Image (tube, rainbow, N blue to C red; front, side, top):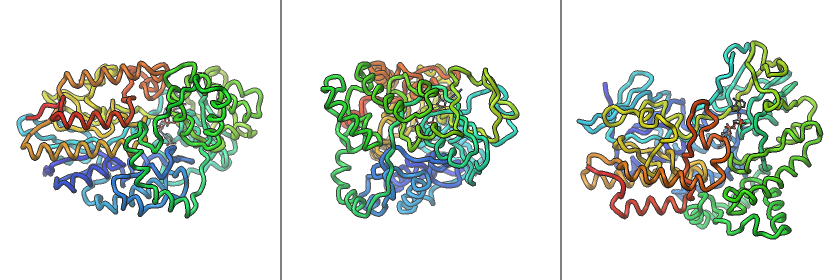
Length: 531
Ligand code: N01
Protein backbone atom coordinates (compact mmCIF):
# COMPACT_ATOMS: atom_id res chain seq x y z
CA UNK A 1 0.00 0.00 0.00
CA UNK A 2 1.30 3.44 -0.89
CA UNK A 3 1.92 5.72 2.07
CA UNK A 4 1.26 9.45 1.54
CA UNK A 5 2.98 12.40 3.15
CA UNK A 6 3.40 16.11 2.62
CA UNK A 7 7.15 15.62 2.43
CA UNK A 8 9.63 12.81 2.06
CA UNK A 9 13.16 13.41 3.29
CA UNK A 10 16.01 11.21 2.10
CA UNK A 11 18.73 10.67 4.70
CA UNK A 12 18.86 10.99 8.49
CA UNK A 13 22.18 12.76 9.01
CA UNK A 14 22.61 16.38 10.13
CA UNK A 15 20.31 17.50 7.28
CA UNK A 16 17.56 14.90 7.67
CA UNK A 17 17.26 15.29 11.44
CA UNK A 18 16.79 19.06 11.33
CA UNK A 19 14.62 18.97 8.19
CA UNK A 20 12.29 16.44 9.80
CA UNK A 21 12.05 18.60 12.90
CA UNK A 22 11.31 21.81 10.96
CA UNK A 23 8.66 20.15 8.82
CA UNK A 24 6.87 18.76 11.88
CA UNK A 25 7.18 22.13 13.61
CA UNK A 26 5.38 23.70 10.63
CA UNK A 27 2.65 21.08 10.73
CA UNK A 28 3.62 19.05 7.65
CA UNK A 29 3.39 15.28 7.61
CA UNK A 30 6.80 13.78 6.91
CA UNK A 31 8.59 10.48 6.46
CA UNK A 32 12.35 10.35 6.47
CA UNK A 33 13.91 7.36 4.73
CA UNK A 34 17.40 6.26 5.74
CA UNK A 35 19.38 3.32 4.41
CA UNK A 36 21.35 2.87 7.65
CA UNK A 37 19.97 1.24 10.79
CA UNK A 38 20.11 4.56 12.65
CA UNK A 39 20.63 8.30 12.36
CA UNK A 40 24.04 9.82 11.62
CA UNK A 41 24.49 9.85 7.84
CA UNK A 42 28.17 9.75 6.95
CA UNK A 43 29.03 9.57 10.67
CA UNK A 44 27.09 6.32 10.88
CA UNK A 45 29.21 4.69 8.18
CA UNK A 46 32.70 6.23 8.38
CA UNK A 47 33.95 4.40 11.49
CA UNK A 48 37.53 3.83 10.38
CA UNK A 49 40.31 3.96 13.00
CA UNK A 50 41.06 7.56 13.89
CA UNK A 51 37.90 8.97 12.25
CA UNK A 52 37.50 12.44 13.65
CA UNK A 53 35.95 15.69 12.53
CA UNK A 54 38.24 18.46 11.38
CA UNK A 55 35.91 21.29 12.43
CA UNK A 56 36.12 22.37 16.07
CA UNK A 57 33.54 20.25 17.87
CA UNK A 58 31.89 23.19 19.64
CA UNK A 59 30.89 24.59 16.24
CA UNK A 60 30.21 21.28 14.52
CA UNK A 61 26.67 21.04 15.82
CA UNK A 62 23.24 22.60 15.54
CA UNK A 63 23.09 26.22 16.56
CA UNK A 64 19.41 26.98 15.90
CA UNK A 65 18.46 26.20 19.49
CA UNK A 66 20.31 27.67 22.44
CA UNK A 67 18.67 25.11 24.71
CA UNK A 68 19.81 22.16 22.58
CA UNK A 69 23.30 23.64 22.32
CA UNK A 70 23.65 24.04 26.05
CA UNK A 71 22.42 20.54 26.88
CA UNK A 72 25.35 18.89 25.09
CA UNK A 73 29.02 19.07 26.08
CA UNK A 74 31.81 17.98 23.75
CA UNK A 75 34.67 16.17 25.45
CA UNK A 76 37.48 17.19 23.07
CA UNK A 77 38.39 19.99 20.68
CA UNK A 78 37.94 17.71 17.65
CA UNK A 79 35.28 15.08 18.21
CA UNK A 80 35.73 11.46 17.18
CA UNK A 81 33.22 9.67 14.99
CA UNK A 82 31.65 7.85 17.97
CA UNK A 83 31.02 11.08 19.86
CA UNK A 84 29.53 12.81 16.80
CA UNK A 85 27.25 9.83 16.26
CA UNK A 86 26.20 10.00 19.94
CA UNK A 87 25.54 13.72 19.48
CA UNK A 88 23.30 13.11 16.47
CA UNK A 89 21.37 10.45 18.37
CA UNK A 90 21.04 12.88 21.28
CA UNK A 91 19.79 15.64 18.95
CA UNK A 92 17.32 13.32 17.19
CA UNK A 93 15.97 12.17 20.58
CA UNK A 94 15.75 15.69 22.00
CA UNK A 95 13.94 16.87 18.87
CA UNK A 96 11.83 13.72 19.01
CA UNK A 97 12.12 12.99 15.29
CA UNK A 98 13.07 9.31 15.18
CA UNK A 99 9.40 8.34 15.14
CA UNK A 100 9.09 9.96 11.70
CA UNK A 101 12.06 8.04 10.33
CA UNK A 102 12.22 4.67 8.67
CA UNK A 103 15.65 3.02 8.84
CA UNK A 104 17.15 0.21 6.76
CA UNK A 105 15.32 1.72 3.81
CA UNK A 106 17.17 2.80 0.71
CA UNK A 107 15.47 4.99 -1.86
CA UNK A 108 15.87 3.43 -5.29
CA UNK A 109 13.71 5.62 -7.46
CA UNK A 110 11.74 8.87 -7.26
CA UNK A 111 9.35 9.89 -10.06
CA UNK A 112 7.41 13.10 -10.53
CA UNK A 113 3.76 12.54 -11.39
CA UNK A 114 2.80 15.55 -13.49
CA UNK A 115 -0.96 15.05 -13.30
CA UNK A 116 -1.18 14.57 -9.56
CA UNK A 117 1.75 16.89 -8.81
CA UNK A 118 3.31 14.41 -6.43
CA UNK A 119 6.53 12.47 -6.07
CA UNK A 120 6.35 8.66 -6.05
CA UNK A 121 9.23 7.01 -4.29
CA UNK A 122 10.19 3.33 -4.42
CA UNK A 123 12.56 1.75 -1.88
CA UNK A 124 14.88 -1.26 -1.99
CA UNK A 125 12.24 -3.22 -0.06
CA UNK A 126 9.69 -2.47 -2.80
CA UNK A 127 7.68 -0.09 -0.61
CA UNK A 128 6.01 2.91 -2.24
CA UNK A 129 5.58 6.37 -0.80
CA UNK A 130 4.10 9.52 -2.29
CA UNK A 131 4.63 13.11 -1.24
CA UNK A 132 4.07 16.64 -2.44
CA UNK A 133 7.69 17.55 -1.68
CA UNK A 134 10.85 15.53 -2.01
CA UNK A 135 13.87 16.74 -0.04
CA UNK A 136 17.34 15.30 -0.39
CA UNK A 137 19.55 15.24 2.69
CA UNK A 138 21.99 12.73 1.24
CA UNK A 139 25.13 14.76 1.91
CA UNK A 140 28.06 15.60 -0.34
CA UNK A 141 30.39 12.73 0.56
CA UNK A 142 28.26 9.63 0.98
CA UNK A 143 29.07 7.41 -2.01
CA UNK A 144 32.36 5.60 -1.44
CA UNK A 145 34.74 5.19 -4.35
CA UNK A 146 36.97 2.18 -4.86
CA UNK A 147 38.87 2.75 -8.10
CA UNK A 148 38.46 0.07 -10.68
CA UNK A 149 41.87 -1.57 -10.13
CA UNK A 150 42.39 -4.65 -12.24
CA UNK A 151 41.79 -7.75 -10.10
CA UNK A 152 40.05 -5.64 -7.44
CA UNK A 153 37.95 -8.54 -6.19
CA UNK A 154 40.65 -11.20 -6.37
CA UNK A 155 42.33 -10.32 -3.06
CA UNK A 156 41.97 -13.21 -0.61
CA UNK A 157 42.64 -11.18 2.54
CA UNK A 158 40.33 -8.65 4.24
CA UNK A 159 39.60 -5.33 2.55
CA UNK A 160 37.70 -2.28 3.72
CA UNK A 161 36.78 1.18 2.46
CA UNK A 162 37.11 3.89 5.11
CA UNK A 163 33.63 5.21 4.29
CA UNK A 164 31.85 1.89 4.87
CA UNK A 165 33.79 0.52 7.81
CA UNK A 166 32.50 -2.55 9.70
CA UNK A 167 30.71 -2.02 13.00
CA UNK A 168 32.89 -4.59 14.74
CA UNK A 169 36.57 -3.84 15.40
CA UNK A 170 39.10 -4.79 12.73
CA UNK A 171 42.08 -6.57 14.25
CA UNK A 172 45.34 -5.27 12.76
CA UNK A 173 47.61 -7.02 15.29
CA UNK A 174 50.46 -8.88 13.62
CA UNK A 175 49.04 -8.07 10.15
CA UNK A 176 50.58 -6.61 7.00
CA UNK A 177 48.33 -3.72 6.05
CA UNK A 178 48.27 -1.72 2.81
CA UNK A 179 46.53 1.66 2.84
CA UNK A 180 45.73 3.19 -0.54
CA UNK A 181 45.11 6.93 -0.33
CA UNK A 182 46.43 9.84 1.69
CA UNK A 183 43.44 12.18 1.87
CA UNK A 184 41.82 13.03 5.24
CA UNK A 185 40.73 9.40 5.76
CA UNK A 186 44.16 7.93 5.01
CA UNK A 187 46.06 10.55 6.99
CA UNK A 188 43.81 10.01 10.02
CA UNK A 189 43.78 6.22 9.90
CA UNK A 190 47.43 5.43 9.03
CA UNK A 191 48.93 6.44 12.43
CA UNK A 192 46.24 4.51 14.32
CA UNK A 193 46.58 1.39 12.15
CA UNK A 194 50.38 1.59 12.53
CA UNK A 195 50.04 1.35 16.31
CA UNK A 196 48.80 -2.24 15.95
CA UNK A 197 49.89 -3.61 12.59
CA UNK A 198 53.10 -5.55 12.03
CA UNK A 199 53.83 -3.79 8.73
CA UNK A 200 52.13 -0.83 7.07
CA UNK A 201 52.52 0.08 3.41
CA UNK A 202 51.18 3.50 2.43
CA UNK A 203 50.35 3.66 -1.28
CA UNK A 204 50.59 7.39 -1.98
CA UNK A 205 49.75 8.98 -5.31
CA UNK A 206 49.74 12.66 -4.34
CA UNK A 207 51.73 13.85 -1.31
CA UNK A 208 49.67 16.02 1.01
CA UNK A 209 49.94 19.07 3.19
CA UNK A 210 48.77 18.47 6.71
CA UNK A 211 48.57 20.63 9.80
CA UNK A 212 48.52 19.22 13.34
CA UNK A 213 45.07 18.76 14.80
CA UNK A 214 46.26 19.62 18.32
CA UNK A 215 43.33 17.81 19.76
CA UNK A 216 42.86 17.98 23.53
CA UNK A 217 40.33 17.28 26.21
CA UNK A 218 38.25 20.29 27.24
CA UNK A 219 38.26 21.43 30.84
CA UNK A 220 35.00 22.12 32.69
CA UNK A 221 35.85 25.83 32.59
CA UNK A 222 36.26 25.79 28.81
CA UNK A 223 32.94 24.04 28.32
CA UNK A 224 31.23 26.60 30.56
CA UNK A 225 32.88 29.40 28.59
CA UNK A 226 31.72 28.04 25.20
CA UNK A 227 28.17 27.92 26.52
CA UNK A 228 28.41 31.42 27.97
CA UNK A 229 29.70 32.77 24.65
CA UNK A 230 27.30 30.79 22.47
CA UNK A 231 25.03 33.64 21.36
CA UNK A 232 27.96 35.83 20.42
CA UNK A 233 29.67 32.97 18.50
CA UNK A 234 26.42 32.11 16.71
CA UNK A 235 26.04 35.67 15.50
CA UNK A 236 29.48 35.55 13.88
CA UNK A 237 28.89 32.05 12.46
CA UNK A 238 25.79 33.34 10.71
CA UNK A 239 27.62 36.28 9.19
CA UNK A 240 31.02 34.81 8.41
CA UNK A 241 32.07 33.33 5.05
CA UNK A 242 33.01 29.98 6.59
CA UNK A 243 30.09 29.44 8.96
CA UNK A 244 32.66 29.39 11.76
CA UNK A 245 33.12 32.20 14.27
CA UNK A 246 36.08 33.45 12.26
CA UNK A 247 35.57 36.79 10.48
CA UNK A 248 36.88 37.19 6.92
CA UNK A 249 40.64 37.74 7.09
CA UNK A 250 41.87 41.13 5.95
CA UNK A 251 45.46 40.01 5.45
CA UNK A 252 47.14 39.10 2.18
CA UNK A 253 50.02 36.63 2.38
CA UNK A 254 52.24 38.50 -0.09
CA UNK A 255 51.47 41.94 1.30
CA UNK A 256 52.22 41.00 4.89
CA UNK A 257 55.86 41.68 5.87
CA UNK A 258 57.88 38.47 6.09
CA UNK A 259 58.44 38.51 9.85
CA UNK A 260 54.77 39.14 10.58
CA UNK A 261 53.67 36.56 7.98
CA UNK A 262 55.94 33.91 9.49
CA UNK A 263 54.71 34.72 12.98
CA UNK A 264 51.09 34.29 11.81
CA UNK A 265 51.86 30.95 10.15
CA UNK A 266 53.85 29.66 13.14
CA UNK A 267 51.06 30.69 15.47
CA UNK A 268 48.47 28.93 13.27
CA UNK A 269 50.67 25.80 13.13
CA UNK A 270 51.01 25.79 16.92
CA UNK A 271 47.29 26.29 17.47
CA UNK A 272 46.43 23.61 14.89
CA UNK A 273 43.06 22.98 13.26
CA UNK A 274 41.83 25.08 10.35
CA UNK A 275 43.38 28.34 11.56
CA UNK A 276 46.12 28.47 8.90
CA UNK A 277 43.87 28.19 5.86
CA UNK A 278 41.66 30.97 7.26
CA UNK A 279 44.53 33.26 8.27
CA UNK A 280 44.83 35.11 4.94
CA UNK A 281 42.27 36.00 2.29
CA UNK A 282 44.37 35.25 -0.79
CA UNK A 283 45.75 31.73 -0.25
CA UNK A 284 43.51 30.22 -2.91
CA UNK A 285 43.48 33.18 -5.28
CA UNK A 286 47.10 34.34 -5.58
CA UNK A 287 49.69 31.72 -6.69
CA UNK A 288 52.51 33.68 -5.07
CA UNK A 289 50.67 33.82 -1.75
CA UNK A 290 49.84 30.18 -2.02
CA UNK A 291 53.46 29.23 -2.63
CA UNK A 292 54.62 31.05 0.50
CA UNK A 293 52.18 29.08 2.68
CA UNK A 294 52.88 25.84 0.77
CA UNK A 295 56.63 26.22 1.29
CA UNK A 296 56.08 26.94 4.99
CA UNK A 297 54.25 23.61 5.24
CA UNK A 298 56.87 21.73 3.20
CA UNK A 299 59.53 23.00 5.62
CA UNK A 300 57.52 21.52 8.49
CA UNK A 301 57.46 18.15 6.70
CA UNK A 302 61.21 18.28 6.07
CA UNK A 303 61.76 18.91 9.77
CA UNK A 304 59.57 16.03 10.85
CA UNK A 305 60.72 13.22 8.55
CA UNK A 306 63.79 11.38 9.78
CA UNK A 307 64.18 9.00 6.82
CA UNK A 308 66.17 11.10 4.29
CA UNK A 309 65.32 8.80 1.38
CA UNK A 310 61.57 9.52 1.55
CA UNK A 311 61.46 13.23 2.44
CA UNK A 312 61.29 14.47 -1.14
CA UNK A 313 58.55 11.99 -2.00
CA UNK A 314 56.38 13.32 0.83
CA UNK A 315 56.58 16.96 -0.27
CA UNK A 316 53.38 18.23 -1.85
CA UNK A 317 53.52 20.28 -5.02
CA UNK A 318 49.89 21.28 -5.65
CA UNK A 319 48.45 24.61 -4.44
CA UNK A 320 47.86 24.26 -0.69
CA UNK A 321 44.18 24.24 0.28
CA UNK A 322 42.93 23.50 -3.24
CA UNK A 323 42.41 19.95 -2.02
CA UNK A 324 40.56 19.79 1.27
CA UNK A 325 43.04 20.86 3.99
CA UNK A 326 44.02 17.93 6.17
CA UNK A 327 44.57 17.80 9.92
CA UNK A 328 46.55 15.01 11.49
CA UNK A 329 47.78 13.49 14.70
CA UNK A 330 51.25 11.95 14.31
CA UNK A 331 50.93 11.42 10.55
CA UNK A 332 54.48 12.50 9.63
CA UNK A 333 55.96 10.88 12.75
CA UNK A 334 54.48 7.54 11.67
CA UNK A 335 56.73 7.44 8.59
CA UNK A 336 59.75 7.47 10.91
CA UNK A 337 58.81 4.05 12.26
CA UNK A 338 60.67 1.06 10.87
CA UNK A 339 57.55 -0.97 10.13
CA UNK A 340 56.00 1.81 7.99
CA UNK A 341 56.91 1.95 4.29
CA UNK A 342 56.01 4.64 1.79
CA UNK A 343 55.16 3.30 -1.67
CA UNK A 344 55.36 6.18 -4.11
CA UNK A 345 52.77 5.51 -6.81
CA UNK A 346 54.17 8.23 -9.04
CA UNK A 347 57.28 6.07 -9.40
CA UNK A 348 55.59 2.69 -9.27
CA UNK A 349 51.87 2.84 -10.07
CA UNK A 350 49.50 0.10 -8.98
CA UNK A 351 49.19 -2.39 -11.82
CA UNK A 352 46.65 -4.70 -10.21
CA UNK A 353 45.31 -6.13 -7.00
CA UNK A 354 46.36 -9.76 -6.69
CA UNK A 355 45.21 -12.67 -4.51
CA UNK A 356 48.04 -11.85 -2.13
CA UNK A 357 48.21 -8.10 -2.12
CA UNK A 358 49.05 -5.17 -4.38
CA UNK A 359 51.22 -5.41 -7.50
CA UNK A 360 52.90 -2.19 -8.56
CA UNK A 361 55.02 -1.70 -11.66
CA UNK A 362 58.04 -2.68 -9.52
CA UNK A 363 56.98 -5.44 -7.16
CA UNK A 364 54.18 -7.26 -5.40
CA UNK A 365 53.44 -6.21 -1.82
CA UNK A 366 52.00 -9.23 0.06
CA UNK A 367 49.28 -8.07 2.46
CA UNK A 368 46.74 -9.40 4.95
CA UNK A 369 44.47 -6.34 4.86
CA UNK A 370 43.88 -3.64 2.23
CA UNK A 371 42.35 -0.36 3.37
CA UNK A 372 40.88 1.70 0.56
CA UNK A 373 41.09 5.31 1.75
CA UNK A 374 40.25 6.30 -1.80
CA UNK A 375 37.48 8.79 -1.14
CA UNK A 376 34.04 9.48 -2.52
CA UNK A 377 32.07 10.25 -5.64
CA UNK A 378 31.38 13.64 -4.13
CA UNK A 379 28.65 16.26 -4.67
CA UNK A 380 26.60 14.39 -7.27
CA UNK A 381 27.43 10.68 -6.71
CA UNK A 382 24.60 9.87 -4.31
CA UNK A 383 22.01 12.07 -6.01
CA UNK A 384 22.65 10.31 -9.31
CA UNK A 385 22.41 6.87 -7.74
CA UNK A 386 18.87 7.63 -6.58
CA UNK A 387 17.33 7.59 -10.07
CA UNK A 388 15.33 10.79 -9.69
CA UNK A 389 12.97 11.49 -12.59
CA UNK A 390 11.36 14.88 -13.03
CA UNK A 391 9.05 16.32 -15.70
CA UNK A 392 8.56 14.15 -18.82
CA UNK A 393 10.38 11.28 -17.12
CA UNK A 394 13.74 13.02 -17.59
CA UNK A 395 16.19 11.72 -15.04
CA UNK A 396 18.79 13.74 -13.20
CA UNK A 397 21.34 11.50 -14.90
CA UNK A 398 20.03 12.58 -18.32
CA UNK A 399 19.92 16.21 -17.33
CA UNK A 400 23.47 16.13 -15.98
CA UNK A 401 24.73 13.75 -18.66
CA UNK A 402 27.75 15.93 -19.27
CA UNK A 403 29.03 16.52 -15.73
CA UNK A 404 30.40 19.92 -16.68
CA UNK A 405 26.74 20.80 -17.18
CA UNK A 406 25.58 20.03 -13.67
CA UNK A 407 23.31 23.00 -13.16
CA UNK A 408 21.15 23.96 -10.21
CA UNK A 409 19.64 27.11 -8.87
CA UNK A 410 21.36 28.07 -5.59
CA UNK A 411 22.16 24.39 -5.06
CA UNK A 412 18.61 24.23 -3.71
CA UNK A 413 16.43 23.43 -6.71
CA UNK A 414 16.71 22.04 -10.24
CA UNK A 415 14.73 23.12 -13.30
CA UNK A 416 12.53 20.27 -14.51
CA UNK A 417 12.27 18.82 -10.99
CA UNK A 418 9.31 20.55 -9.33
CA UNK A 419 8.94 20.45 -5.55
CA UNK A 420 12.37 18.85 -5.21
CA UNK A 421 14.92 20.43 -2.87
CA UNK A 422 18.54 19.55 -2.19
CA UNK A 423 20.08 20.36 1.19
CA UNK A 424 23.71 21.41 0.58
CA UNK A 425 23.22 20.46 -3.06
CA UNK A 426 25.76 21.03 -5.85
CA UNK A 427 26.57 24.74 -6.34
CA UNK A 428 25.77 25.71 -2.77
CA UNK A 429 28.57 26.62 -0.28
CA UNK A 430 28.34 23.15 1.38
CA UNK A 431 31.72 21.52 1.97
CA UNK A 432 33.71 24.74 1.78
CA UNK A 433 32.01 25.97 4.92
CA UNK A 434 31.25 24.55 8.34
CA UNK A 435 28.71 22.04 7.02
CA UNK A 436 26.16 22.01 9.92
CA UNK A 437 25.85 25.81 9.63
CA UNK A 438 25.30 25.53 5.87
CA UNK A 439 22.72 22.79 6.45
CA UNK A 440 20.75 24.89 8.93
CA UNK A 441 20.52 27.77 6.47
CA UNK A 442 19.19 25.45 3.74
CA UNK A 443 16.74 23.63 5.99
CA UNK A 444 15.29 26.91 7.24
CA UNK A 445 15.04 28.31 3.70
CA UNK A 446 13.24 25.18 2.46
CA UNK A 447 10.92 25.08 5.45
CA UNK A 448 9.97 28.77 5.00
CA UNK A 449 9.43 28.11 1.30
CA UNK A 450 6.98 25.25 1.98
CA UNK A 451 5.05 27.43 4.41
CA UNK A 452 4.89 30.14 1.74
CA UNK A 453 3.61 27.65 -0.86
CA UNK A 454 0.93 26.50 1.57
CA UNK A 455 -0.13 30.09 2.26
CA UNK A 456 -0.20 30.90 -1.46
CA UNK A 457 -2.02 27.64 -2.20
CA UNK A 458 0.62 26.98 -4.85
CA UNK A 459 0.86 23.42 -6.11
CA UNK A 460 4.43 23.52 -7.36
CA UNK A 461 7.66 25.47 -7.22
CA UNK A 462 10.58 25.03 -9.59
CA UNK A 463 13.55 27.13 -10.69
CA UNK A 464 13.37 28.53 -14.20
CA UNK A 465 16.13 27.69 -16.68
CA UNK A 466 17.40 31.26 -16.94
CA UNK A 467 17.95 31.50 -13.19
CA UNK A 468 19.60 28.10 -13.17
CA UNK A 469 21.94 29.00 -16.03
CA UNK A 470 22.80 32.34 -14.46
CA UNK A 471 23.58 30.79 -11.09
CA UNK A 472 25.65 28.00 -12.59
CA UNK A 473 27.62 30.45 -14.69
CA UNK A 474 28.26 32.59 -11.63
CA UNK A 475 29.49 29.58 -9.62
CA UNK A 476 31.83 28.55 -12.42
CA UNK A 477 33.18 32.08 -12.90
CA UNK A 478 33.97 32.45 -9.20
CA UNK A 479 35.64 29.03 -9.14
CA UNK A 480 37.70 29.82 -12.24
CA UNK A 481 38.98 33.00 -10.59
CA UNK A 482 40.61 30.84 -7.89
CA UNK A 483 43.31 28.18 -7.82
CA UNK A 484 40.80 25.45 -6.86
CA UNK A 485 40.10 24.48 -10.45
CA UNK A 486 43.81 24.04 -11.20
CA UNK A 487 44.13 20.99 -8.94
CA UNK A 488 42.81 17.45 -9.35
CA UNK A 489 40.56 16.71 -6.38
CA UNK A 490 37.13 15.46 -5.42
CA UNK A 491 36.06 19.12 -5.54
CA UNK A 492 36.52 19.01 -9.32
CA UNK A 493 35.26 15.44 -9.80
CA UNK A 494 38.60 14.40 -11.27
CA UNK A 495 39.02 11.66 -8.62
CA UNK A 496 36.34 9.58 -10.37
CA UNK A 497 37.20 7.81 -13.59
CA UNK A 498 35.10 9.18 -16.44
CA UNK A 499 33.47 11.94 -14.36
CA UNK A 500 33.62 15.20 -16.32
CA UNK A 501 35.44 17.99 -14.60
CA UNK A 502 33.37 20.70 -12.95
CA UNK A 503 33.40 22.73 -9.77
CA UNK A 504 30.18 22.29 -7.85
CA UNK A 505 30.64 24.49 -4.82
CA UNK A 506 29.62 28.14 -4.54
CA UNK A 507 32.81 29.89 -3.44
CA UNK A 508 31.34 33.30 -2.64
CA UNK A 509 31.08 32.53 1.10
CA UNK A 510 28.17 31.49 3.29
CA UNK A 511 27.59 35.11 4.31
CA UNK A 512 27.04 36.31 0.74
CA UNK A 513 25.12 33.17 -0.13
CA UNK A 514 22.73 33.63 2.80
CA UNK A 515 22.09 37.18 1.66
CA UNK A 516 21.42 36.06 -1.92
CA UNK A 517 18.92 33.42 -0.72
CA UNK A 518 17.18 36.00 1.46
CA UNK A 519 16.95 38.45 -1.45
CA UNK A 520 15.47 35.74 -3.68
CA UNK A 521 12.67 35.39 -1.12
CA UNK A 522 12.25 39.15 -0.65
CA UNK A 523 11.85 39.47 -4.42
CA UNK A 524 8.98 36.97 -4.45
CA UNK A 525 11.09 33.83 -4.95
CA UNK A 526 12.88 35.40 -7.87
CA UNK A 527 14.08 32.78 -10.34
CA UNK A 528 11.48 30.24 -9.23
CA UNK A 529 8.16 29.56 -10.97
CA UNK A 530 5.15 28.81 -8.78
CA UNK A 531 1.89 27.35 -10.02
O1 N01 B 1 39.18 11.00 0.21
P1 N01 B 1 40.11 11.92 -0.74
P2 N01 B 1 39.07 10.99 1.81
N1 N01 B 1 45.16 5.15 -7.12
O2 N01 B 1 39.41 11.94 -2.05
C1 N01 B 1 43.85 8.43 -3.48
C2 N01 B 1 35.89 14.42 4.19
N2 N01 B 1 36.46 13.77 5.33
O3 N01 B 1 38.09 9.93 2.18
O4 N01 B 1 45.19 12.75 -4.29
C3 N01 B 1 45.86 5.61 -6.08
O5 N01 B 1 40.42 13.22 -0.10
C4 N01 B 1 43.90 9.91 -3.72
O6 N01 B 1 45.07 10.25 -4.43
P3 N01 B 1 45.11 11.62 -5.30
C5 N01 B 1 36.82 15.58 3.83
O7 N01 B 1 36.07 16.62 3.28
C6 N01 B 1 36.56 14.50 6.45
O8 N01 B 1 40.38 10.97 2.44
O9 N01 B 1 43.80 11.65 -6.07
N3 N01 B 1 45.38 6.47 -5.18
C7 N01 B 1 43.86 10.43 -2.29
O10 N01 B 1 45.12 10.35 -1.69
C8 N01 B 1 37.71 14.92 2.83
O11 N01 B 1 38.39 15.78 1.97
C9 N01 B 1 37.18 13.96 7.53
O12 N01 B 1 46.28 11.49 -6.16
C10 N01 B 1 44.12 6.88 -5.36
C11 N01 B 1 42.92 9.43 -1.62
O13 N01 B 1 42.93 8.25 -2.42
C12 N01 B 1 36.73 14.03 2.10
O14 N01 B 1 35.89 13.53 3.11
C13 N01 B 1 37.66 12.68 7.52
C14 N01 B 1 43.33 6.43 -6.42
C15 N01 B 1 41.50 9.92 -1.57
O15 N01 B 1 41.45 11.10 -0.83
C16 N01 B 1 37.34 12.88 1.37
O16 N01 B 1 38.44 12.37 2.13
C17 N01 B 1 37.53 11.94 6.36
C18 N01 B 1 43.90 5.53 -7.33
N4 N01 B 1 43.22 5.09 -8.40
C19 N01 B 1 36.93 12.50 5.27
N5 N01 B 1 42.11 7.01 -6.32
C20 N01 B 1 37.32 14.81 8.70
O17 N01 B 1 36.44 15.52 9.11
C21 N01 B 1 42.16 7.80 -5.23
N6 N01 B 1 43.36 7.73 -4.65
C22 N01 B 1 38.64 14.82 9.30
